[in-house]
Image (cartoon, rainbow, N blue to C red; front, side, top):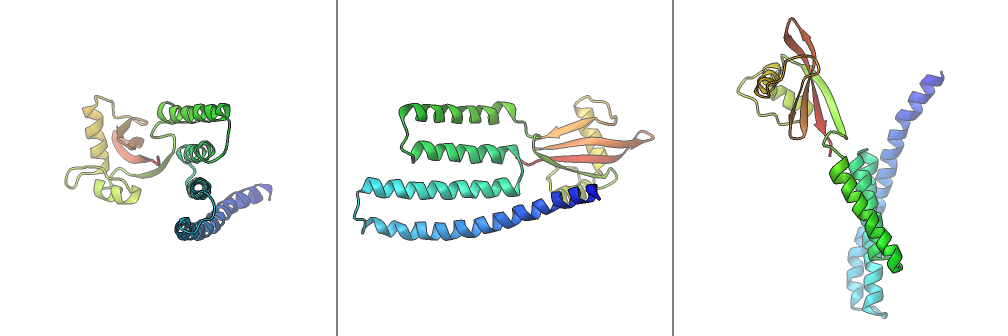
Length: 205
């Protein structure tokens, strides 16, 4: 019973995230509409252009952060989290009235985030995978996994993997992998020296 409730609540959380994203999307669409209408207010503004621009940038950056938040809720990847943090810190630097020291700390934080994304993340930190039969044609595997493998006409997936492994002078064994840009192909199982299943790992970043 306890395990069932844990699984149920875990699955339910995804639907709650979708609902939150939907509500947030509606709010952002309305906010964007009012922001577009507010552009005309520059001609009727009683205050200074500096005040108007400050308020406009504040609203625009808030909407941008909201958009990135929706991405984070719908696509749980390290890259989307970094992007949300980057927008939030950038808003603090551009819009908020902060001291020189605060701005310096914000710039350092942005630098650290950029360095983290460039040097600590790999293409396959955030990925999705699917296992298909080795006897499947490459063309069909592309459809199933939503990838774009450049196979020869009528080539089977196992032959595709073997061809690339041999080109890289690797042994055809369980666990052997081929890396092609944002896609990795790993030999999942073999029988009598023939690849029977291939795991297709696709990067989400």
